[in-house]
Length: 89
Image (cartoon, rainbow, N blue to C red; front, top):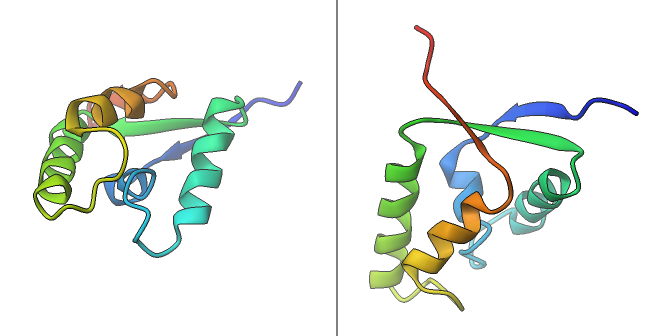
């Protein structure tokens, strides 16, 4: 079996999983699917949960968040098996 590739993910890509009015949503959802299916390991810096939370709150205020609310969306992000890493300067 081939080892999954490791991808350092930018928060802007993750937000596309919930903000369907963004550009390149299909590619972002495909990457999410790769993670769920075990074809990719998605890694984020430890600051990412704060960035994601802020992005979701701002999207909710602007009525861009469809379906789940902010808290449920945040939980759903980490249900796909993301890894948080402390940056190594």
